[in-house]
Length: 311
Image (tube, rainbow, N blue to C red; front, side, top):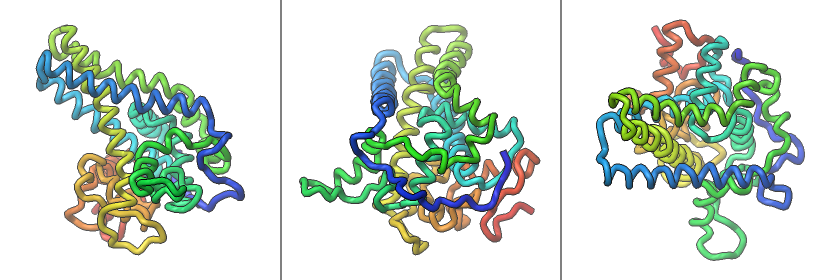
């Protein structure tokens, strides 16, 4: 995967994504699984902790797997695959693709196509997850709009014109191979913390179950809602230091948990950059990780903000 000139997100003619009779039925079923299973898993983790305690191993696996997969989503799916903000060799490309897939937010092609469509139509008709107030005459339009932008959109998004959105990914054999085995990577993201929990507790079943619940399902649940909050809260509440043509906003309180993704107004002002940090005090863990990879020679052609290039 190599870098390229700034990707154009101009909308192809007739390419709108909204609820309708042609909503993909299989995608709707997958949305129920995507939302429902981690929710039940998080509740199960809480019940398990009440019954058997919450150990340092549980916490370590939750934090470690959360960091790995959040970097995969924000650094990989978002900045690398969606915006081509740096280049990487096949091994590092595979790392980004697998780590992002283990987050269970959808395969690479789905995630990137949806995000590029978001940039093409931000906060207008055709934006898959804009939290604009619902204009259908029913009560609580703002609340229902916020719900749609947060999670409701998953049940209405349509798969169409993806070839026009992601031609670069469709031509990349490595990316398509990773995309094809998406469900295998999701299972790996559950099996890995379970195996680590088992090993770190001397082969105990309690350690394996705790790893599965906290490092697997609860981690997916928490990261999902942080990512979705960038879609919903990040277009509703927060600061707007840049006068973009949309309603994108910076949400400082989410910055550590979104590894820098919640500097959303910064991102919409300069979407092609590998960093979202526009001030020294803004936390951007994904940007710092990309910088580290650059210093180690593992990525190249990194697009930095002005005065933020490595020495």
